[in-house]
Image (tube, rainbow, N blue to C red; front, side, top):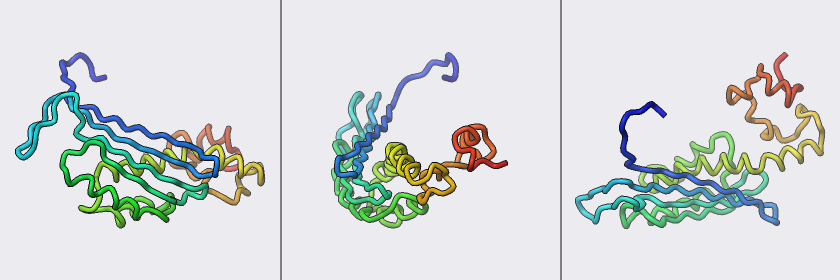
Length: 186
């Protein structure tokens, strides 16, 4: 991307998220992080991680209802740098009962922050929230439109909570005027 300078690949991080709508109306959101080394990583107290091996390969899955409530959480570590790391997986069950929305990141830090959780799994939780929002948005909007086609009268304002959150959806922007003219600034 930055020109023709010589470079050497040393690390690849892949974050993958999948959203599944279940027949019972719940959503399963799975997020995985995989850190693959392209060079050896030498440690003082354990075997090295060799090129092509994962230093981190972890997943977290959430069961979420249509109102953004977390019903269940599972975390697992397929590869971690230290044998103690998988002990952190169970702490993520403390997130059951939280609602994705304002203050969600703060509540995550309060429940699994500091030395109890895993930095990599905790980082994935934001992606879980974003994936759930993206995946469930068409269903939420369809429910609102069935109540009233005018978004100013929708009982669940979360369906248009993204307005004003980025350049494309700015309040004085063309995208908003085209898609939701009722909500656009005059």
